Length: 56
Image (cartoon, rainbow, N blue to C red; front, side, top):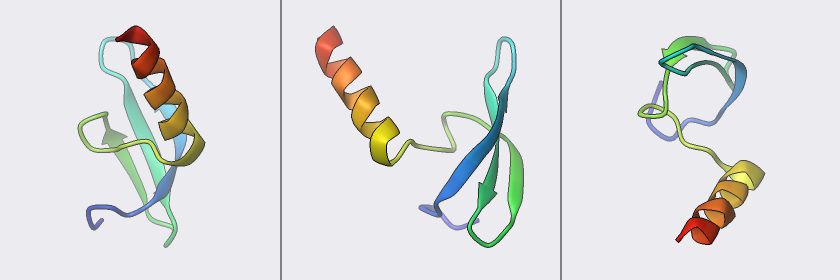
């Protein structure tokens, strides 16, 4: 997948290492992605930004 491709997390699992399975717009699914490989967008990104702002 190209950097910046938007997708939807369809599964989040893990114990010590949280990993995600993501379905992209073209139908491709990629598993074993973690926070190093994906970034939140939309409402989730705004919610996380507000939460981080409250912490500091």
